[in-house]
Amino acid sequence: GTLRANESVTLTASVTETVTAIHFDDGDRVEAGETLVEMTSAEEHALLEEMRATLDEAQTQYERVKSLTKQGTAARSLLDERRRQWDTARARLSAIESRLDDRLIKAPFAGVVGLRDISPGALVEPGDVIATIDDLSRIKLDFNVPATYLSALHPGSVIHAYSAGWGDERFKGAVATIGTRIDPETRSVLIRAIIPHPEMRPTPG
Image (tube, rainbow, N blue to C red; front, top):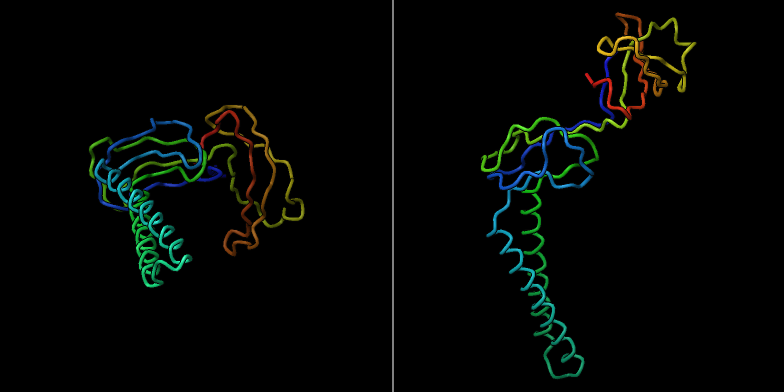
C-alpha cells in the first residue's frame, strides 16, 4: 500500500514579486490562515493606509450631506455625488486589499511545512513553488485487495499495517472507503484506510 497525508498542498506564487519576509522554517507546524511568506512593500502598505483615510473622509462627507439633505439645505444631486465618491473609495480600497492579499502566502490548513527553496530577496513568478504543507494528524493508506475478499471488508474493518522503515512496529487503523470499481486487469479493488498519526510516523509516500 501507499501512505498519503490527510491533506497535502503545494503553495505557489500568483504574482511576479520579490519575497520580503519568510515566517517559517523547515518542518514547522503552522495553523490555518497563518501567513508564511510576504511579498509586499512599504509603498503598498502606505497606499492602503491612504485609501482607508480617503474612505473614512468620503463616508464622513456623505453622512454630513445626507443630514443637510434631510433638513432641506443641500441638493439631492450633491448627496448622490457624495455617495458615488464613497462607493468609489470602497471599490479602490477593496482592489488594494486584493493586491496585498495576492502577495501574502497563507496556510490553507493546519499542518507541517516541508523544505523551503526560497529566501528573502528572491524574485518569484506565478507557478513558482513557495512551500509544501501536509496535514499529518492522520494518514491515509491506499491498498488493493483481490475482489474475492470484498465480502469480508466493510467500512470500519480494523487493519494493521507494517513499514520496512519501522521494523515490527504495528500501526492500527480502520477501513474508511471501499472503491466502487474493480480493476478489470488485476481483478482487485482499491481500499482506503485511515491510521491515526499522533507520533508522526510512518511517513507518507
